[in-house]
Length: 111
Length: 116
Image (cartoon, rainbow over all chains, first blue to last red; front, side, top):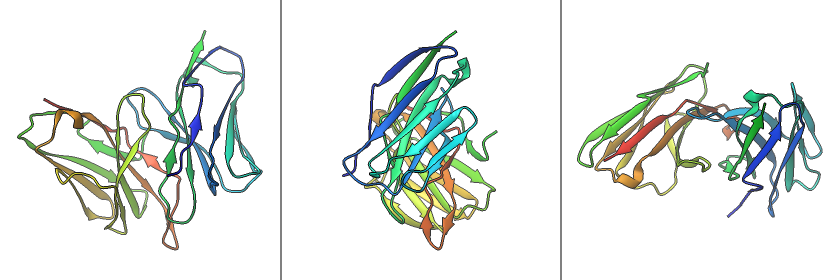
């Protein structure tokens, strides 16, 4: 089945730094999504991407849909303590297909 | 504030108990989902309801029984669970366009289930 690869499992950054995380696959996806999950909460959608090459921003977050349709990245600029959480990428291969989730990256921000 | 409401937030049950998890959304979404999530792992899809009909069952054991009474409500009935079923159970909803599931899921906060 399709798999989405996210690594490393954990990232540690200093407050104010930028951080970039990517998500790769050997399969083509037609939709890429990025979710964030805080402890004790459900995942929250950050950004959805629908076209190859698309670059979309949401505040300090920027995400891109890779041209090959096999990858996506998420960039967080000027990190703040509330950016702490688990970031999941997710993809959809086609119409009516279920979401495939990556294993997630746990982000820690040192004040 | 989440627009998908799940109750209870926490549930402890024995292996012989019968309990239910409830989910409600008022966004007009016609697709609703149950996911199971273990600690530090991604959510795993269990069931999808589309227009109140079960459209996807990911080979979930029969001790989990979903029900969609109407377009706003989704239940998960639990019976004779095992300790390994302890997890965070997440409900989600999404739009559908011309019958196509849209991947933009709105999740509830989850129900933390412990099976003793």
